[in-house]
View 1 (cartoon, rainbow, N blue to C red):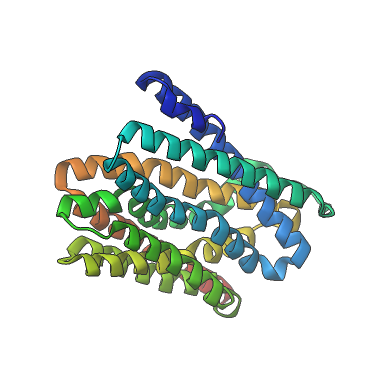
View 2 (cartoon, rainbow, N blue to C red; view 1 turned 120 degrees about the horizontal axis):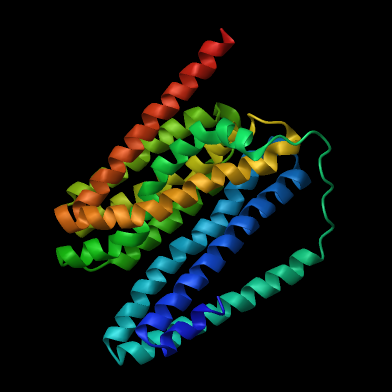
Length: 312
């Protein structure tokens, strides 16, 4: 965050290098923080609340990312009305500094909490953990393309179509993402992670198809909202199934390995969607993401079938 505050005052290439370094630092910190916080919550509340712990962590982390996207659109609009470099540079520095202050405040508050005890037991190799969670991680990675394309290309899609209202669409995505987790997180415990994932993937596919075929910005906004609602429960739903493949003493490693798949998905989806947009237009990126979610649906249905067949 502190590195990011200096990019606006540098030349193009130094700023690019510093920005890349800042992104690497933020990504590393986010990964350790997310996994650590989730395991902390699970240890404090018990394994029966795994889905709720994952859901609440996602509300804060991905909710913050969803809020950041419309903020970026607003900053760009402000810059268009004034000195683009000066206005956007000052705004970015102010936001980055505020983020750092918030992180320090949260760290101070968390430090006052009593640490949770570790779980005794035999730790298995991370590669073995990775193999166990890979099928669930693959489903997460495929479904994560919907989140990635919304965050990276929705605003550009609106501009290319000559529409206004990208910021409200991004906000609706974030609001329905958070609301779905708040209201329906308990459904994972009642119906199982696979069943909830299948329903969620169906909703996400519908939202992405709305975006692909949207004749009007209102339809695109609806599609963004459906995509947010659909993606909301996939991480915790498949996550519960993933961590269930190992014992309590290895759940932290399982959760970390599982989370990697989403990070890789978001890292690959941006350049890949950019290439698709360059050849077939922005609408095609939503069709591609819908196809990825369909593949995730088939994979999840197969995992559910395998689970039921093993119990017979």
